[in-house]
Length: 194
Ligand code: GLN
Image 1: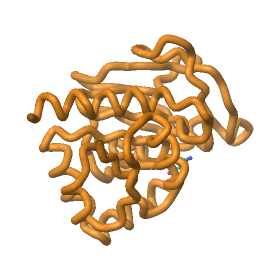
Image 2: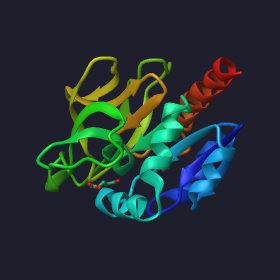
Image 3: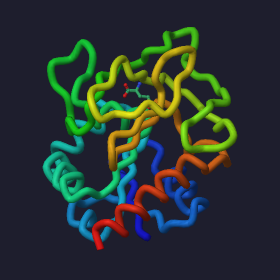
């Protein structure tokens, strides 16, 4: 199973490492042509405005939308979550516009720029170690979106069919269970596409 990590900016090597801990092959994706060989895609954290600009510049917007239309799973973390959202609070334009959620950037405030916590996640037995860095939160979810975890009543992990997002960075600890969850999504999509 091949899982790509969009390698335009952000925490790429860490996602490749964690994907491999979860038992799949992780591939850094720099060109749109590479998408054809992938079974799933991760969009990492970093800076969403920069990632969005680079995606436009290199043709990734249309290519990733097409990838999603084929039913192939996509996992966005932090800035990756922001670029997948249909609505970004306070901004007119979104980036990929894939997932039926409204996100708020840098939502945890300056005094809490970064922190770690243990989170209950639907579908995972024990709490997951979560690292938040200038994290966005999901203000609201539309039809078809399942909330998988909250932090102080704010939505921080969600899923809409083959799309998964988290506000936090699951690639920065040795707890690879959210990647394992995504690998399982990719596995079921391969079975249903076969
Ligand atoms: N604050 C960043 C943004 O708005 C996201 C931060 C992150 O990915 N760690 O793009």
